Image 1 (cartoon, rainbow, N blue to C red):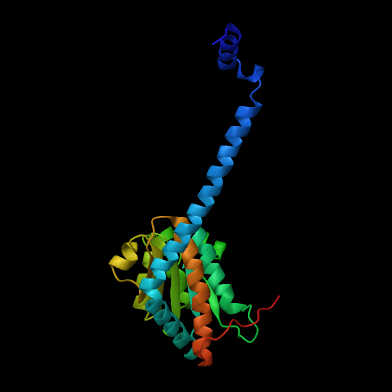
Image 2: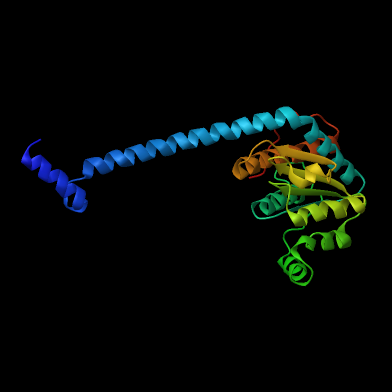
Length: 237
């Protein structure tokens, strides 16, 4: 190695900002972009794999859940939903799917998201405890012909566990969307139907939950219409 090359190496080590590093930076950026692209593909494959495993195991359970919700509506009952954090968004999404159907010809059906009332949630959390924010609402709103749907990626959320227990005591049908092992909700059989996604990733679990309740919504309307699902119906813009 020449003295000039050696000097450049020493200079680059101590003063990298003073040397021409454009090529090195470009190579580093190219490697990063390639790694990110590979990560996207790996996550997509994992998401598809989780869904395939779930539906292979739980398709009949999902149909059972749809039949029970259809029975609720036939008996003039309503759907109640609940979740925490990102799962509260799933609870809200499911409720609005039934209240405001996006597909032409599907009727609006009563659904209440119990995770949406911040005044009620903060009042009960402050006065009694966060684990009772849903049980208090169930005591006031739930009827024996209703169905409660809870979303918990772990199955261990205290307020959802208590909600399931309260709903069962009131004679309310309970459907639980969980992940991992199903947690306490599954272990203690606190749901009439427990749909557990076989993954440790919260993101993959919630992605599967989303696919499930879109399918569930469609199944319920097909059952209520007493027609088998055919080609996709036209959606409103």
